Length: 185
Image (cartoon, rainbow, N blue to C red; front, side, top):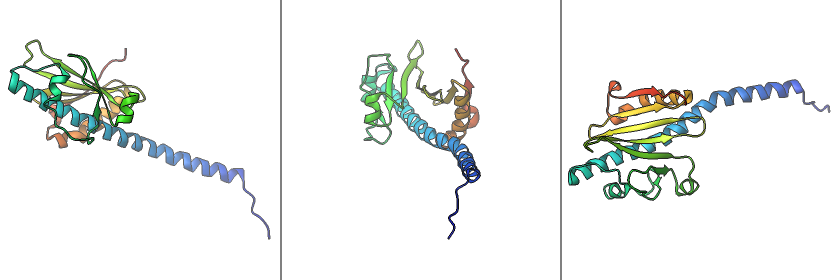
């Protein structure tokens, strides 16, 4: 009985097929994972926007103070990620997708609040940096408006796809949202 020998040509062809399949699957994997994380961040933005509006109803002004907003945030045990402990007024706050990631300050977003001078309107933003994608998600209040601003070319690709994906869930028209790319520093 003759044993078949393994050829380098066969190995090369097999390796080429595996690399092509990985090259095709990688962008889809990145899109799926990042879409889930951005969806959780957008849900947190909407909850924060609602908290700001509830705060406004009680105090006739909006606030920068996360400790005040915590009172008005819906409590949904572990369903949408975890916020770091509330910081000082006007300070950014870190959001992650699990307690473990939060303790290592990885794989999350920095959230901030910006108000106009009269504190009669504003926006809450989530900044995603590091790694291949860089973008900022913004939700305005009292009139809700979603914006995704890209920080790099991969972020622009993501913002275009994510805006098309998320707008039907937010029940908003395409012209209500904008996708922009910030210039590189």
